[in-house]
Image 1 (cartoon, rainbow, N blue to C red):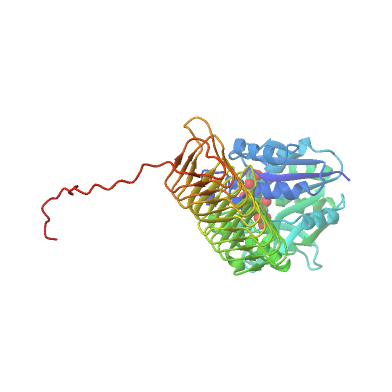
Image 2 (image 1 turned 180 degrees about the vertical axis):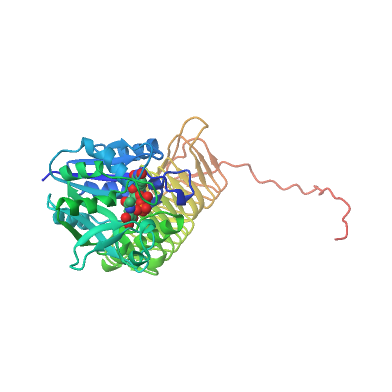
Amino acid sequence: MTLAIIIMAAGKGTRMKSTRPKVLHTLAGQPLLGHVLHTAATLNAQHTTVVTGHGAEAVETCVAGINGAARCVRQMPQLGTGHAVQQAVPILPDTGTALILNGDVPLIAARTAQALVQACAGQHLALLTIELQDASGYGRILRNAAGVITGIVEHKDASEEQRRIREVYTGVMAAPTAWLKGAVMNLRNDNAQGEYYLTDVVAQAVADGLKVTSAQAPSETEVLGVNSPAQLADLERRHQLQQAQALMEAGVRLNDPARLDVRGRLTCGTDVEIDVNCIFEGTVHLADGVRVGAHCVIADALIGEGAVIHPYTHIDGAGQPVQVGPRSLVGPYARLRPGAQLGAEVHIGNFVEVKNSQLADGAKANHLAYLGDSTVGQWVNFGDGSITANDDGAHKHRTVIEHDAHVGSNCVLVAPVTVGAGATIGAGSTIGKNAPAGQLTVARAKQVSLSGWVRPTKEKKAP
Ligand code: UD1
Ligand code: CA
């Protein structure tokens, strides 16, 4: 059966007190609307229509970036949720089911939406409802003595008695598309907010003899909307806790599930341990036995078996995923940038930065170093405080350090340059020409001592 999804995303979101359209605020690193679009994409709908209005251009750019097949219709001005759906229905087919989702309710699960579509079955009006301890602000579900739904009353229009009802409308409904097309055109705006309420279609369904059914949302988190920064932060924590629980169920050991942030997709092998306050972004895989220390930020990376990422390490593979080989040790305070590829048992120590460089098995750069645009062979030891000067101001050049070479402390390798296999570079050398294999190369001023030299003096003042 034809399924058409309508996502309402035109509202201003006044309570966010932000110039950014509400649906573009991010949860787990992704716009609220992005979450809804991704979920919608799993429902095999023939039509996905997003109603835009406030900040329409930015919202439409976001939609196009996530689902090129989704269509946007503009609602100008924004006269309520019923008015929003009025803009969308003319481009929908006359058969099948229409599912209405909210751009500001990001965590609705696909199976929950699917269950509602099934409850509708192309012929009933199906509402997703939930019982809340504090229902204030929400539309209340009205039922008669037999428990049959008779309507929805908005909080602002509700009587004292109606406000005591705990069952609320979540903002998600499924309806026969053909019927919905007619029903939204009959809406009136004679209510407390002077808006066209989509929720008034429920009373119309009752009048039309259409059966109104409901499905209960399985969890509050799925149907909570974002209207303020506090609600956004609350939902973020709920979502993060759910992700942490899923990781723990899969065997990942988290020192504190409340102090983990996954903003993307994190997959883990067995016996993975993650200490507190780590952030994972993009796509990250931690293989069997990986340990991640406290306060690490890891984006787009593949971390090999048994590798240890020590505290305060920043790994960012944006564009070119960072690879850390098996049993490598990285950090504390290390920085791996795009194109860093470490083989097995590589050691990258404190205050070492690696960019667009391949380090073969067993290579080490343990302290205060920079390796950029370089190819580093097996067992190379890159000394403390040494760097590759890879950028001549206009172009980047490569440095090749062949296997088993030892580069002493505080050296500058001026690219393009090659240090041959087994070569040793004396500490403090500036190497601008290739250093031959197997030899000691030193390029620094000779040390001199002047015996007759007298240090200039000035009168010392008492402190
Ligand atoms: C709505 C429901 C309420 C329900 C609640 C659940 C109505 C009248 N009320 O209230 O019963 O309990 O959701 O969260 O539907 N939007 C537009 N154009 C508009 C107005 C809103 O596209 O003219 C969009 C908003 O961007 C948002 C969604 O519709 O994504 C809901 O609008 P909002 O103003 O937040 O409705 P609520 O007052 O929360
Ligand atoms: Ca809302």
